[in-house]
Amino acid sequence: MGKIIEIENLTWKYSNTDKPALDNVSLDIEENSFIGVCGPNEAGKTSLVSCIKGLIPNNFMGIYQGEVKLFGKDIKTLNTKELAEYVGFVFADPESQFTSMSVEEELAFGMENLGLDRKEIGKRIEWVSEITGLEDLLDKSPYDISGGQKQRVAIASVLSMQPKIVILDEPTSMLDPLGKDSIFEICERMKNELNMTIIMVEHTIDRLARLSDKMILLNNGKIKKYAEPNIFFDDIDEIIELGLNPPAPIVFLDKLKKSGLYNGDIKTKLEDVIEIARDIYKENIKKEDLLCNQKQ
Ligand SMILES: Nc1ncnc2c1ncn2[C@@H]1O[C@H](COP(=O)(O)OP(=O)(O)O)[C@@H](O)[C@H]1O
Ligand SMILES: [Mg+2]
Image (cartoon, rainbow, N blue to C red):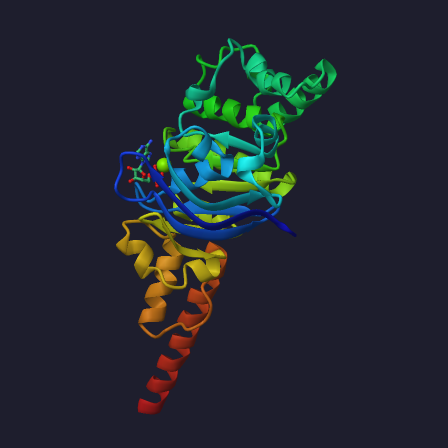
């Protein structure tokens, strides 16, 4: 796997602000990986992903230092069409992206802009509506469906353009629990079935951790951690201090570690943690039995 995104010493300050939103950020992202981004409000998450989409500096005023490269090319040298082909962006508010009166037209819109022919557009609509479960909604107005369905339309229209990189910036933040579930399910299918690099900004860290190959923790415009989940959660104190909730199984393992009952690696899967807890329990029962036998 090669590096698809390379960020080097990136500092970005919106005009009329004193503090940079991104402060000397360097990071590489491997092709076809799933990257989870978390951090408190105002940490710089949206600014970071906006730099990867080229929205910064193209659509914002400010001071830009450093470099963002996609496929080895400086993002500043890419034109709008190339950027649209390389990177798709799903916002928290799906309606902000809608332009059409039916779901089907909405899905076709981006592909028409890419200049695809009718046949290819038809094929891709069939493909994305299956992945996102929109088959029965194609005739509906994108404004008259549930929040979760709206977000699925937004994701489908991005996927239909088959970008190499898909960014989702808090796509579940405006949805009810059912809507959230459906988006995470689609993200899982995207991860398993599509050759795309996915970057997801998300508050629900436990679900993000289950999907992520690597996770980024941002605070004050700086990268605090960038690692695979088992290393990322090795020290959860910093994550908790920033007001974020690490996954419950990891908090439990951390407690076992701190009380001296466990000193192995951090596991992110609930099944693994249950197994560890069972072993510790059995071992301690054995020790107690031995002690009782010695006393008798
Ligand atoms: N359009 C903007 N103009 C000025 N400052 C902004 C703008 N957008 C974000 N900021 C500031 O940049 C910093 C990072 O914000 P943002 O990237 O939106 O963080 P996050 O997505 O983690 O909440 C914050 O201090 C925020 O107030
Ligand atoms: Mg944000």
